[in-house]
Image 1 (tube, rainbow, N blue to C red):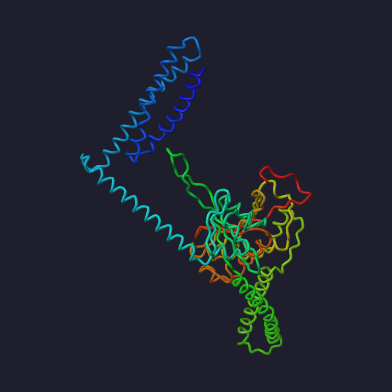
Image 2: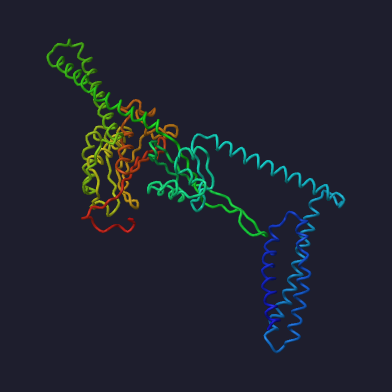
Length: 486
């Protein structure tokens, strides 16, 4: 029985070594001298396995030992084969190193390889030092999170911005520096592959956080096999935007106050111009100038109303009043209200609703939803050529309801795309179309106030689709959920 146990131990140990060495044949193509030094145990292992196997087979034929003996004999053959293969590999590597077959040059070649290796190490150290210097010179905080949300590295700016939480940076996790639910949810989104941004107030300062997915390479494996594996981490960028937020609030207050104060003189100008026209105080040749005054006063009133509305949304003064809304009747009313402008340009408005969604109801503010859709519909009608249809559609996308408006206008060029939702920004194609340049800005901020998102897809000179999605909150009296709802 002692011989059986001994054979079992030798077999187990040898089998593990074979697996490691067999895998190493494909990976250990460098350092041939070390490979040769590792081969010394193979002949002894082959001889020992063969001898013990022969003893077990011949000495104890009536016991359980012969199967182990045959396995050890087979193992000895494998050792010999492995020794032959590794010797060939090591000798081939040695022969490939030298430019010509002169073994006297091997020390020189070996010294050259060591110098090259040291040069590579020095270069890597310089690059690492340069990257660290760049990281420390940034005035924004940078924190790198590992695959388990552990903190791998950070810079001084992050330590200063996080204040009392900075000690956690030395050894901790993301939940140690950001423990509020919103921040943890955003970091989870970054680990899910989606970049996201959010703001938080900490210690009297407003910090802007941006989290993005990051692939981190790590070397894994044992001493025989080492390989690079990429694991998903996250890059967290922190910036102090307290001053920018203060300036933004000042700007919003100025626009709000200026818009409010301008309403009185504009109204007075309009009343005076109307009185002049109605009482006959204007010479017939001057009637055209009165019409110009009234037309520009109307444009000014429209602009002031849009400024006031945008200011209310941005400052949080806008209050939502959500109620149950039935999808199809509500959209039909929107189209009915847009018919006068569409008929003027001979444009048909088509309605497309996902099957089964029309009779359902959801919770939303009808006045603000009407404002969103009317802005997008009026824009689509203004820019669409005559007799080209405009399509209003609604569909469900998981936990969102998505509304979109498609037209066949001039489209949006890639140059204009990043600025299309800016205040007062107008594309070249929109310069000749009446408007204030605030409609899409209102749509963007109003959709975010309602908990949604807005975007667009455009093919220049072909079609443009503006869309926004709002959280789907089914009314209690709605029908059972559709199969793909979440």
